[in-house]
Image 1 (cartoon, rainbow, N blue to C red):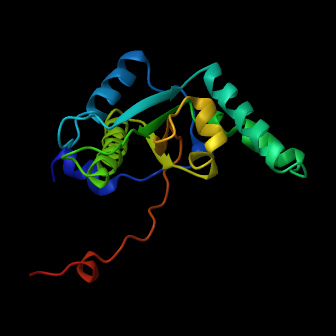
Image 2 (image 1 turned 135 degrees about the horizontal axis):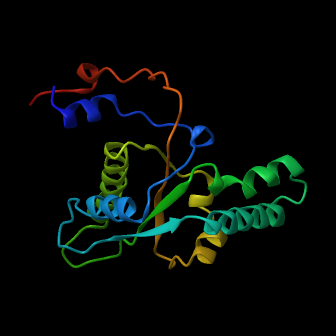
Length: 187
């Protein structure tokens, strides 16, 4: 099997709490984002954009999560709020892929959203190819309008994924994969 097929056949998400540094440096991140942007994009709209959470930006984003959760759930435990404050610091780097899909005369919204999903996968594969481990996540913050607004998302924008990037010291056991033959029909 060639290297690319081997990477695709063995890629496995890693839990962000297992991730350690160093994360991608500036040149590696630029390469990862450039590769992520080389995705199917009907109409050349680039219906997505990136928000990078690095360094102190991770702590600021986590503090924002805790603030919003505390306002929504005043009874939230100290531990839960601490977990939210740490949300973006679990991995050395987090990249949000923002779907900018909007009505277009020729390009369906769905195709634009799928392009944002493809960006997430390309980003993941590029990071793994450079020796990092990743986790593509959403969780409640991806759907919380107060959080999204504070990040600077427009009303029509959505989070396609938060891609956590780092290194791990131990191998992770693979999970059960779907039976492709049960999911495939021929016409």
